[in-house]
Length: 171
Image (tube, rainbow, N blue to C red; front, side, top):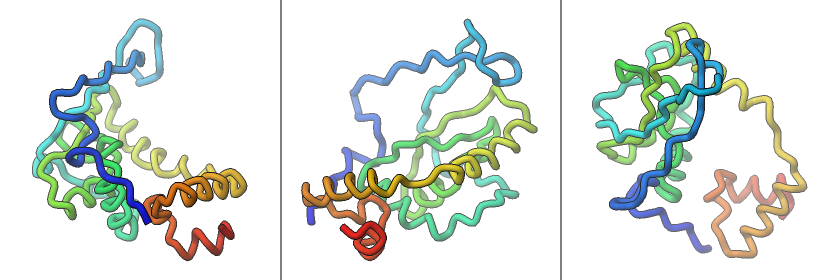
């Protein structure tokens, strides 16, 4: 099976490449979108030793660390870690642990400086919980997996194990 090659390095921004423009997002003092104000969403490459997990993180991430590490190796570090002004992780604990497992020195981060402490605490939970509201459309997923299989892509690159890919979706 063909494996997807990672981009050069673990980061999505290539050396000498153009930085994508900052999104024209706006907010008011409470973090709600408002016309005319720009929200700072700049990605910075932070030394991993300068960031740390939130001590009361309610998620059990251990089982996800290795799959996330493999995803970073194959596809690059595509989703930055959100941190507060003290380097405490807001969102991205699993990516942080995966980066440590991969021996990375720097990781892409977005410093969040426009939310109150209360909003940050609530966002930590919401960021994980709201994803649970979605589900798979098995027919569409099966078609996507069939297309990847036809391209000779290793289906484990998707995060599904071979057994699950073949039994659950009957590929």
